[in-house]
Image 1 (cartoon, rainbow, N blue to C red):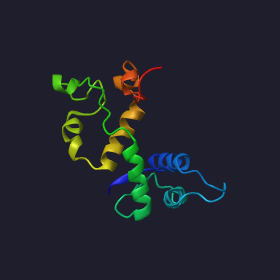
Image 2: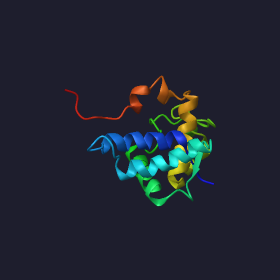
Image 3: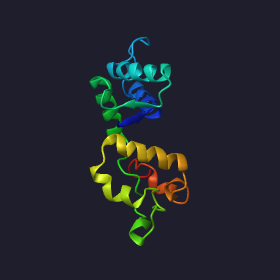
Length: 140
């Protein structure tokens, strides 16, 4: 089962709410409604992950659009796996995760992102955090 963690569903809902706010303050956009249905069922059944393969198409497409708005790889251009480390000091991925990253599905990538974010030991989260910040254009 390819699982999508509940925190990703919640982040996608919030991204869509910001991107497409309710015009009347009552009715959410179609993407939020689709994702909220999945989220509600996850909460009701106390499931930490949604099965990507059986997720309703509208919710899955809304989630994928959110994923596309996120950084793809956690790399900060300091790759210690190239120096023989089993776990990259820069991004926190294992050597296999670094090697196989291009072939990973969106949910597999998000699973790795979740793990390295929770661990927060990679340099991208502390020593070189400025490298991980999104570039917003020229400094004023």
